[in-house]
Amino acid sequence: MNRRIVSALLGYLTLFCGAAMIPPFLLAAIEQEFDGAAAFLLSIFLCLAATFELERFGGLQDKDNLGIREGIAITGLGWLLMSILGLVPYFAGGYLNFLDSLVESVSGFSGTGATVIEDVEVLPRSILLWRSMSNWFGGLGIVVIFMAIMPQFGRGGMYILKAETTGPTKERQMPRIRDNAKALFSVYVALTIICAASYFLCGLSPFASINHAMTTIATGGYGIYNGTVSEYGNAYLEYCMAFFMVVSSGSFAMYVVAFRRGIGTIFKNTEFRTYLLIVALASAVIALDLFFEKGVDIETATRAAFFHVSSLSSTTGFVAHDFDTYPPLSKAFLMMTMFLGGCAGSTAGGLKVARIILLFKFVALIVRQKIHPNLISQVKLSGRPVDLDVVYGAAKFFFAVVVLDVLFAAVMMFDGIDFVNSISVSVSTMASVGPGFGIEGATSGYSLLPDFSKFCACGFMFLSRLEIFTVLALFSPLLWDKSKSW
Image (cartoon, rainbow, N blue to C red):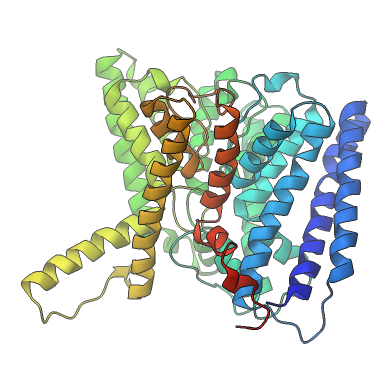
């Protein structure tokens, strides 16, 4: 591994983190939030100090190109650095202790959106803005956004894109890596602006519109009120939010292609069509369950079902009603959508619908080959053949998620949490959802977890956002071996 390149690019990332803190610092200064302004000023200084130290050991040359090991190291360590620097405003401002600040920062950047803050409404607006910004930067990917606005990474930039982008397939829409990152970032920004304008037309204030737009498109779910969306009691807003949460669950690469080739390409995408079908069926079942079991009128039941299926399947985690009080069948369907997640290449968490499709098709292929041993067939997605390595990768990821779900649940049971609550929190954390059932509840987040479980939750959120193997690779001695370069 070329540690000089890794150190240099990590230095650029910390500088980027400091620049990202300028807007909340200015807001704190304008609104005379002196504690907040001091906290952000200290945070910016620490980012600059980290940049200076990293640049002392690093440096880029014209001939430099990233290899796969440098890409993994920059992605994994970059996320870790951003999460650590991102906790400083919470801790330095006296709003949270160190552990809770770390949880809040990791939850924000990972897009989990589970908070340890019991009353977010007492926070200054600068801190609320920083929480939303951490969701937004982490949604598309810290390093992808960095690649879009910083100098060319060289050919090896593809390794970073692969390490940070979610899903079983990592497709390029443009020949140059930076152009690819810029196209994704442009779509991301455009959707955020359209979403904020829509929320403003639904009656939200400019500040609320911007904050909720960032956390909606990033599918992070941080809000500026304790009850998130339920505080508004606005049916139009709920439908609008549900729509944008569904949109954000689609592949951003798919939207780039649609912009170039026409909107029809969106509806030719097998994964997105399957995702829409799952949302429609789950919403219908839950709406009927609420209508017959709880006596909720059909319009309210339909709106609540569509909103919460969109929220949990996209892993945004917004709450319009307390779904923890829903009948068992509705809870089961919400848990299922939470586990499945959105589409590959989206900002949503979960397993990803593409992996589920590939695994079902792979099982069907095995069954056919049992009946016809000489049959030659391929697994296809959206009409295109998929390499068996990709299919095996989906199976390995599914196995890893199940194992980690069980492991985190076991950790929490060891820490004194009962079985049902441990499973609920574990699934919610590994899916990057945030809200859940039981102790975690629709809005309570991680505030009731013991300290050891909170600390472990940070690790599992980190694993989930970078889809496990990028993080695990950081612990391999082969990654850091200077004698090999490949």
